[in-house]
Image 1 (cartoon, helix red, strand yellow):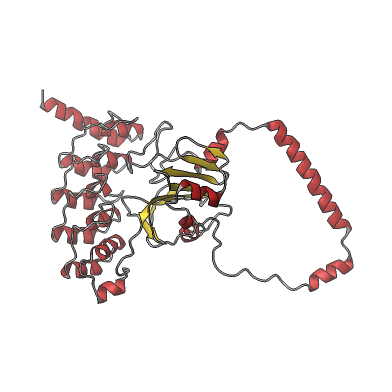
Image 2: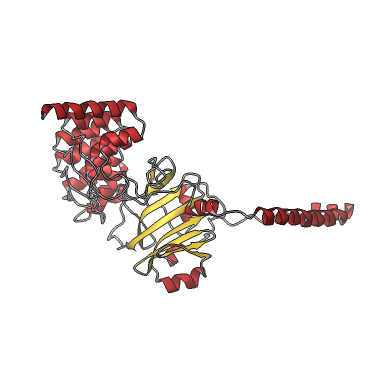
Length: 395
């Protein structure tokens, strides 16, 4: 089973992903697929229904063929070609009309569910919806016709693509590390589009506050807002070092955050923008700033980010920082099979004996346990040797 947000491989009993902290994904392409597979099939009904359907289809085809003639064919050949469909993407379900709505109003729009799930979860033929404090908090939707792009996938449910998602092995997603998807008057986190475009999950955070001025490269190079925080975050994420430099010169707060507590340094780190990371550190970016879940910039280092990790550590990043769920940068690097970052962390004093203290199936696990679970022999041996050297030093 894999996490539907970041693609990390998980054991079948996992409820939460140790990397992104989100609810664990399902083994199928969507919750609906897994639910249907778990439902026993009445094979007798299935066979009888299939035979009847084939018989009816045969009768229809025979009737159509018997009524054909040369005149009919000539008439059909003279018919005008079909009118092309107008451009644009058809909306299958408009989630903007459902987001954060009370349960009663949501049911009036969607109709009665096909099945009541546990807690505040309601099952429909196309997926499910979940409520929090009586209001729609999440929707999982399986497309009737698969879209061909992330942009079209969002448009099918009434949303717009206003920022770039992160790409995992099984999905495209927005979460706390990428920043929320903001559009259509809504701020949404944990937005996950399956890689095969079979379905989408949207988690609604709150109503979005319209920005005073939308960010664009031209607006940055021309006129800068007094604070510039939103523009700095966006430019750092996009890799526009010219815009970042200009915003900082004009007084943008280098440690300003978005609504989830993410800083420009975190945005640049997760997207691998080495030059911007170096510039932000030189301008006094707090290397140990924590997002709302305790996430730090060092935890955002990606697969090829050993250089960035070394820069952050040299600037004083805490190699043993822990998120609210007690996950460390070393554990995240192990889960990402990032041996170069593991090595850099160990050189700077990362403690491989630290273990997960939060409740759950990973409680008590160390970085070495995660390496064994991932079957990464090289990293596992590296951690094992380091742990035993530390233990010998204290004897």
